[in-house]
Length: 452
Image (cartoon, rainbow, N blue to C red):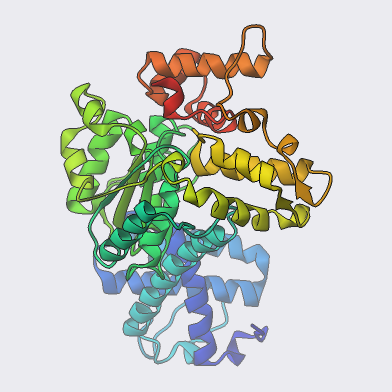
């Protein structure tokens, strides 16, 4: 935007545009802070502070801007402290700090508090859309398959259920082993709903420690804890108007379950360290590979939360129970990895894929095909290009005296078995961060079938 160096040359429309653009940033800075309850006075103070900053920037240069930006903080928090900087944006009346060009009176003439109210509401909406846009663009850039690929009668039943459930706002619980495509089902529900144009916000509940998970979900205020150097909106806020996907909700600690239940019952929450009650309009889709009924019996999962998220249940069959999808999925992954070269599977290699039990389900198949594409010397993938366990038709297992990786994998499996598959407890026993444990589980292809 080209702006004259003299405020006297500014038109009323230009002033409005300057203030509207600047208020977006002001709204984000002040989100969550205590401000005057009288909305009309608040709008006048904020608009006045932005006008002062604009005058400072274009009249006196960047050196004066720091001083006036601090005035904006004051203007939005206290009427008494704001007095030296206040601009009453009413027709024919505009005062600015001493030394500023009084020709701004003409440009602010007719710009009243009603205009400020409209601008701030528009700026607030624009700020929300900008944040959601960042989330949605990140989703488009995520690698991996973007749709459900199947020809299985059992999966057809799942797709029909998705079509019936998606138009509603009911909570959905997706059950299935690791790697069966639970997040894809959640995305399909979102994409077929009236919320499709809003954000789909996923988070893995088992990959983060309790304090970190709560900060990610609810957001936090500046200074709420060590390292909270700035105010941060949580994922629940980002999901406003859209869908929040809680993956592996069965791994969530009981203390966090209570807070989540409150949000689902009232659709209101507080940021960590905050005192302002915030409301949200979102749909919840949760997923887990655990037996929640058993977790309720052992006290690891709250019964009231289970009933709250279990309005609709969708159960995904493991890949070994829908072998007709293996060929279709393998061909899709070949196409997906075409950047490494256009290749196809030999009949013998395809036989190996169809005989294997796939304890890691679709995710394990995806990695096996990618590995074969990269290692294959020619255009035709042979059985020798596949992982050893796939060629032998049996899951891999660590043998005595094996590699360090094999021993670590087996130790993780044994630990998970000893704590009934509870990853947070396993991380405590292993003395590693839950996120590190999750990465190792994914890297080693460990599934619940391995430690039951």
